[in-house]
Image 1: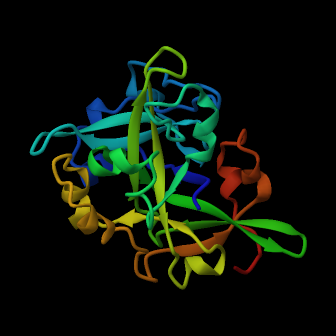
Image 2: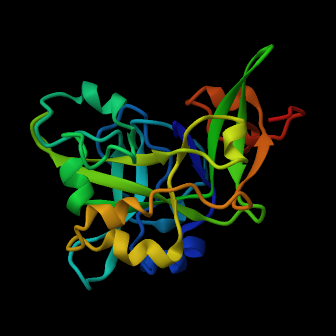
Length: 247
């Protein structure tokens, strides 16, 4: 499962990885958790690091509209709302999609075939049950580098009458490191797989599913962090303050 993640790295530092123009990235700020659509603003100077991204918030994504076309920045509501959904309520249950069955489930099948995206992140939060309650852990690269979750996106006009663009993050079985805190983890795609994943004309679902596996064990480190991150309203560096706890 993936229910919280971070993106503290400025766009100028991660756009090169995804081959998109940093000047075309809308500042993310801190969108309200209940907001169904992003609030556009003109100045990239308003970008702020995000320490505690939660479901229903607006998140960054990278998409490609046509084969061979340029990649572009997009912003989606986290929690996929299928085109046929008539209200927002089901989106809260669609923040993740299981990679093992993504090509079978009606809510995800069409998006998996042709509406795939990359979701930039530089860490994700998972909780482990301990004697004094659930302890949050941050899974991150040793150098704090940005990576990409495998995502799907959809467009819906029925729920509110306005266009709602939303997304989900795929999950898979963990590796030996991340499995110490949870039995699922978000799918992380390697850079050499970005082109195939983003190509809307590539529809070999068996080949795509081969990409949906855990990264090697050395990919992530685990750091126990403050329980301040438990509250989705908190979005500051104190959320990720290291604490003394073993995974």
